[in-house]
Image (cartoon, rainbow, N blue to C red; front, side):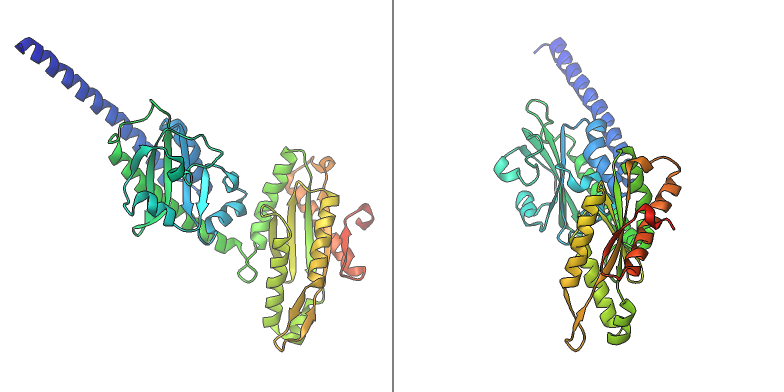
Length: 367
């Protein structure tokens, strides 16, 4: 080989190395910027937005999914409670144990690059997502235990080489794991402040926050929303006759019944004492009345037990108000205040009319 040809080959190799260095530097900066966004995510919802949507734009990925181990339904409950769009998202998948993930990663917490195989990888890419040709799998972990998998898909002829950006992805996996743990812990603390510790449903503070959000949402959609006020009849007598421990048990059971008879996206809260409230978004008078009557009948038929195994009969009074489309004009605070006040007024009317009944707000209750 001539000196001139050797020099040309050396020059070509140098150009390739320089181009690779530039590409790696650009990739590194993109990853660093993205990781900073993840670490600064303001909420779990914001973090999921970055992982499942913004990553496609910022890092140029074609398909991204996230699989999380959620045995106690905690993460899903946080998403449902906040009304997050990710509570029903095909790119986000929840599993009860990490057993299948361990089989995929073979107990090694290291990114995997391989061709997509539906038999092996169907868990990570749902039927509603486009199946890739090649995939990067990033293990998410806490204390060396798999807690999930962040999955990147590429189409044939448009995916990286096996060893390309492995260090970047391994570091990214660690950042995602830490960011998820921080976000979930933050949601856990937030929930403690917005949940009634006795019944496990939302508290008055949470209801007041979501009320504005829900009413604003239905006004934008030009839809209806209904509010139920549910009060346990003669609850003081239960405490006086059977003790506060039995009274607490009744409150828990009533809250559970209400929760089971409405949608997971509906807002259920303990408003105070023996009073509960429910926000039924996109539900008008007829549907709200049906739900309220179902709650009333179920509680009436339920047999509660005292400490001496004595049977306790419980009834409830329920007031309903529906915010109709023609009531959407005006200040949002005034609209929501009047909306709730009228449901409370309907409850008062139900109790005055003999209890154990459902009353709907109407113009006859104005005075």
